[in-house]
Length: 291
Image 1 (tube, one colour):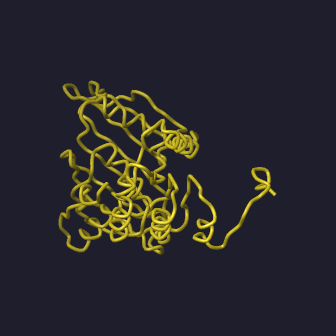
Image 2 (cartoon, rainbow, N blue to C red):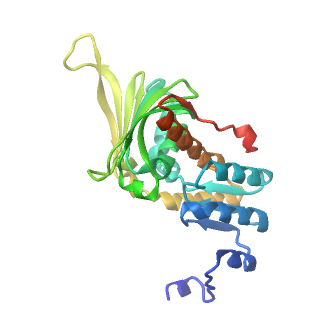
């Protein structure tokens, strides 16, 4: 009955590929389980003229699929869009942080501490994307422990690890067991201040360097401003508006297939490091991908 409010003629299908043979949508949203994404993307790119695919993360299930979908998409990279649903890219609070980093409001970003739960594929997609956006591509990782979470039963494992980025920035990501509490937090350390992201991005606190209140001759941190209730801002609505702008030719994509695939390669390096107990490189050559 609710569908009839939008269209009096609604068709239902049990087979996605059969549906795509009969209809020619401009936009397709993929929000099925990750193991189905590759085949759906492959079919859409090869057998349809769909202009834009909005895909839930992780975009594909593994590096082999990431390489294959990169090769398939390369001929269409300038004419069609695959936009991953990296929701924090549309959050005004996260965009504000990115802008402050670019303007060097607190000087140069030099270190990052992150705390997360529930897997390097699911939560990791958001974590690695934000780290990439804020601090540059992660190019090396070293794992020092695996941490149990409820995502283990889905094969999405969690690790605590050190990392280095292409901008010579070092960082540390610590995994926590979500049986105690869910966590997604990032602390960004600058020469002249600090930005704290908490409550999964719902709250951001900006701190500025100032004379220490207790110890003469040293600097401390004073709260500059606090932004709260940021998740009340409808990320998905911003995403939909952005997709419409893309189709109308009024915007460049906020995130691309490259951004969606990059976390898969970071996850692979983390897995290798867990087994080798050594620093491992993140092997993702954008030139080889053709994107």
